[in-house]
Length: 209
Ligand code: ADP
Ligand code: ADP
Ligand code: ZN
Image 1: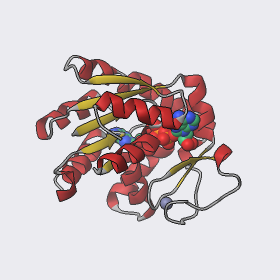
Image 2: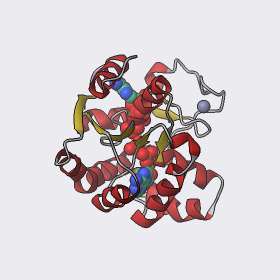
Image 3: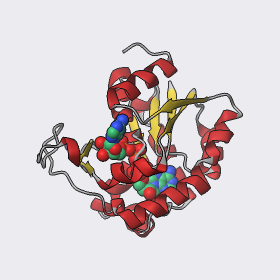
């Protein structure tokens, strides 16, 4: 199954994509993770993307479309995948239509007020992409999955977060209608405990845990 996870920053896309991908044995394709790794490795793409990400804006469509197109050609995508953080604009969605066919779009719904609290407490592992919240870490500073030191993302500062929410509503939210018109959208309440969100997504996909 080819699945898109749609939702504002902090809605739980990464958290749930990681779990659903493990359950369905398909890869998680997180454009945010790919870009953060590129920045860390100082690749040409990373150098180009950094200023946009730091400002809480979007990386230009052509840059990100090329990355995803190439990634979907790899062998591990044959049996499906979850796109986490792509598409984020209508032109990205239109481009995606030309090289892949989607089966479902999961819209994770969380109110803006909750998102700021979630994002300001987020800690991430740049090595494996695992995501945590500081309130649940009990002072632990290393990734439970791979042992890497956890970090706070530079774009998770409050001022940048507000800009990212604006960008979401202006540029990404229209995708709910874009995919709604194709009958693909399944809306899931993201403001309940993580295990419950997981169960709702599995049910929406018609998948067995
Ligand atoms: P979040 O999980 O908080 O929604 P991501 O990790 O998905 O954030 O993305 C972080 C940043 O990377 C975005 O704010 C944006 O600058 C850039 N980015 C990621 N995916 C895309 C995309 N599809 N198009 C443009 N920019 C992107
Ligand atoms: P996104 O990828 O949509 O930006 P994340 O998966 O990174 O969102 O989650 C953002 C923050 O919220 C993280 O700190 C994560 O631990 C936390 N979080 C995720 N899902 C839930 C939930 N259902 N309830 C409370 N906190 C959550
Ligand atoms: Zn890790």
